[in-house]
Amino acid sequence: MKKTNYSYIGISFIILVFGIYFIPKIIDRITNNDTVRNDGGTKINNTNSKKALSDLAFIEINGEPKKVPAFSFTNQDGKTITNQDYVGKVYVIEFFFTTCPTICPKMNANLIQIQNSFTEYKNFGVASFTINPDYDTVEVLKAYANNYGVTNPNWNLMTGDQETIYKLANEGFNLYTAKDASVAGGFEHSGNFALIDKNGFIRSRVVNGNPIIFYNGMISQAEKVDDEGMPEEITILKEDIAKLLKE
Image (tube, rainbow, N blue to C red; front, side):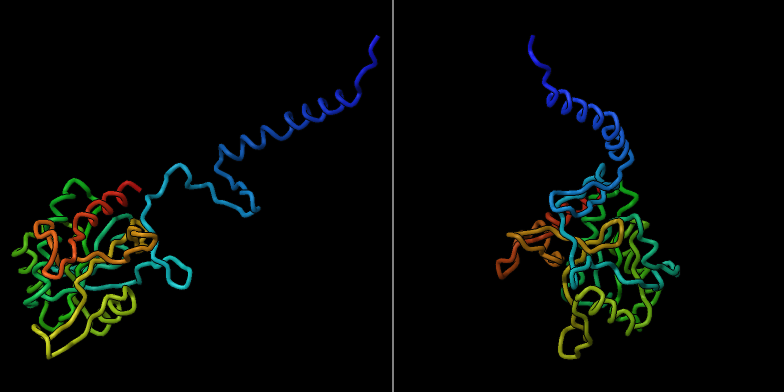
């Protein structure tokens, strides 16, 4: 008769006990989206794992994702609009003024085209801030919106204190804005758009390993390139808006 292999029996007993005690706990943690650990021992929050984010980057400042600063202005309908009105919405931000003779008409024509591409989405919007609030009153903004064909209820053309608007542009978004009597229209500003996700974070696509941060708003899809050979970015902006709407 062969001798009983007690080592084998002992190992089998340990495995059985492990299975009875630990496996239900592991299953319970996974079911309840509890935290798990990676190979380095760092905790990973599994709460949102069922809803994957897109490949768009979060713009980071000092290692922290950059969020839209708090703001409160008056829109073309005389209503107070704040950043909280955009929570849960994907939106595009621009700085403009209604008497701009150069880039603003191009930017807003492109935004109208974007608006018309997402008419079925109730959670898409645009935030336009005038950099000439002394002239751009509620009435002026209303006429401007009607003239361009603004129909999206989440597209707010906003006016307010000029210093506050300039701080929002220059410090909040790093979109340059300034008075300059030497340029056409008397104001100088960026022709770029910022893209914001449903949670208020600034997002952008990554090209060659780096986020582009902003999207050129001055060149139309029909033009394809400007006089200097710079390609249009309205196409990729539309693609990225669609990605964020699915998040």
